[in-house]
Amino acid sequence: MPMHVNDFMRISKALESSYQRLASENMLDNHECVERMNAARDEYTKAMLYATLLDDEIIHITKN
Image (cartoon, rainbow, N blue to C red; front, side, top):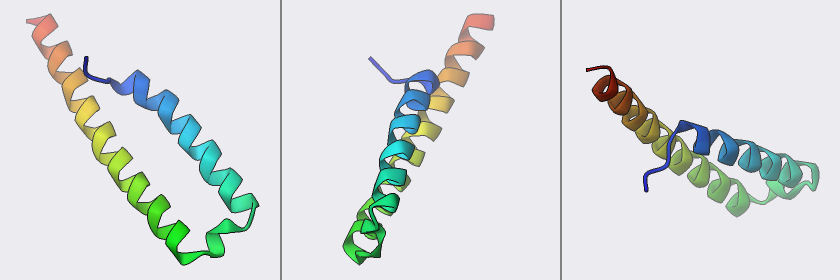
C-alpha cells in the first residue's frame, strides 16, 4: 500500500522532533551525525515528493 501525503506529515513531525532532540543534546557537533541526518532528510524529501505526485494522480483519476 503506497504512503500518501498525510502519512508523510505524521512522519515529518516525528523526524523534526528527533532532529530537535539531537540538536538539544549537542550531538550535531559530530560531523558523521550531521551527514546522516542530512541524508535521511534528503531521502524523506524524495519520498514526500513521490507521495504528493501519487496523491495528485489519484485525485485526477477520481475527478475523471
